[in-house]
Image (cartoon, rainbow, N blue to C red; front, side, top):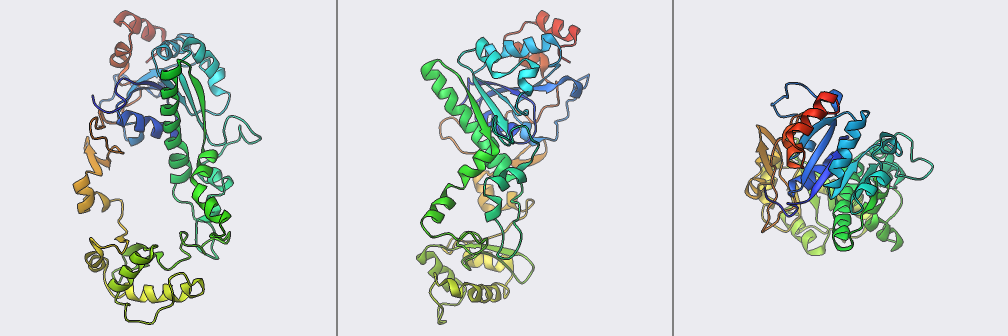
Length: 381
């Protein structure tokens, strides 16, 4: 095993999306994350073919019946040996199952108990259903994304589920574990996607307070309002992403586009931005994406080809960096960030529910007879 989190133990109560992403990040960095899957999802004999859900990679799965008293007792025994526990239920569900934070912290006062929800553990909307698009809408993020005169465009589910959700849950877990190791006292991490998405908007709020950001969508430097921060179509139907904000980078872009000899308006003349978009569009439409890629490669023009999910793993820079990897025949993003002394790794492909019951529980201190008794009782499958 390798990674800076080697020796850290986390119990993950199975969920969807952001909480598993946090578990993936911790496991990629070396933590021993044991995933507690629902017993009804398990197959016997265990399925050996890797599961398709890449967010669950790097962990071992135990299928537990949390409605069985001995299943609950098992989770609490694991909590006694853990640095952290993560769950992604609606508020109150973990308490009803008997594995809420008060119960777990009584068993292990230094435990960090991570809770992943959309709206948070409190507030008038705390118990309401929702998805990424709803959380980023309320956070003020979705309303800023899109072109002028058009409706907002959801940025996949990157901002709420993963950036504002799972990423900040992983950060919260690590911050809590560091604090617990110094103080001996655990705590609850209330990670809400609406809070996290709002946090990601900090720079936008800074621009707004400074008078540099208009509330009208698609009229600002970073929201496609500016001609130098935009996507342009090439002659073959491809696209180039342009982000030449600084004056020296903008000058390089102008030069490589072949426009240096033209009498152009100043870069920050907002009134000229629509006209300059048309001028840039005409220039980019004169060549293919590959031709423009050759022109811009290695320059400071801040222009790059827009790659598909199939193309990105094959780009020379990504190949050199190892940005993508292949595990069990599946191409996927490699662990990030990079660590010089304790590199992270994908230790195993995604588990099938219950696939590693004996192995994982044995490593966490349970004997063969105890495991057999749990299986005979139906507490685990």
